[in-house]
Image (cartoon, rainbow, N blue to C red; front, top):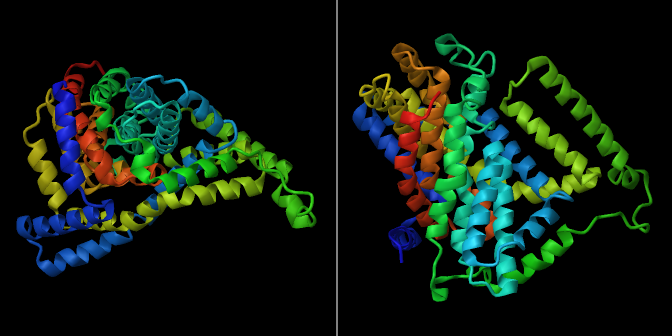
Length: 462
């Protein structure tokens, strides 16, 4: 067994015993942030509670954007033409190693373009790969396949759905007076970011996960063993219903309401209006992406592909439970943001890290800073909202292009996603696993990827 496989198994065993539910992870981090703010700043115990509550509801708009990007991405992933295509693709692997490699490529490449769609598509694809392995009697280790599906979250922030990049590209953003508006052509659409994405998507992530593939069949836990035979059978039945081309029964299609609900004309008219605006948007604004236009694009695409209003309503209903963890936990992380931001703790942490920086080493320092803060604030946009001003100001002072800094920060944010289970919530809901089942393998990837990311940040051309 190679050293990566050995340590991956050790970390998986550790995670199985010690990784709490993502909600409890958020609560524990809340206590840590509270104590750090109390001990390291001039704020007293009651001050920290006030800061916690002040931040609790501060990011409701952003939280809703995150929910929409996840739900619309999920609805699109289960649309006619998309879900059946994933099932056909899942039949390709003939071995466990091939299954891991293909899942890694699907997860990273799609997530590069859209983190919400990639997360959901990869989760659904992992389930399909595991079911095909079960049918073909291939010894597939389901927790590793699911962990591989999550690895796309280690590339998204150097792609076009980058939160920090999109927020900084939006006119009137909170840091505009510090470093201006930074179009994404100066951040993620640069050789600096593109080379990083190629390195991670095509080489580091797939090969690392492939090396952790168990060689001993006795170490492989199939999907049936992981989620239980009864639940597995229920999922197979659910998939049959999902792939049906739903058409209203003549017996139920009696009233005007039924005609409207099952009218493809209505969906296509809404879709046409949406497409017209999308074309107008890019014709007038160029490549000026932000969270709102991303959500709108995937909303319209889902409406068109599902063909009828009622089918899209049902798809959204199917997708919404995957966002339940975000709905519960995002206010707690917003509370952590409040404590870190209002207490001055963010300034202390960020200033301490950035104090070591020179123009040459600044991208490395920004990466590490983003990685540490991401553990407490697992939202790229939310985290950028807390420390982006400080990072951006130091970038300007050192003469480092802010677009390059955004990429370096994004690398840190996505890097420690392999330790922070917040964004795995939706994937876990689809795969039927727990955070502790997959995070050990993700942590091993985080360790292996570190020197490669550092190399790219230092040597890749901007």
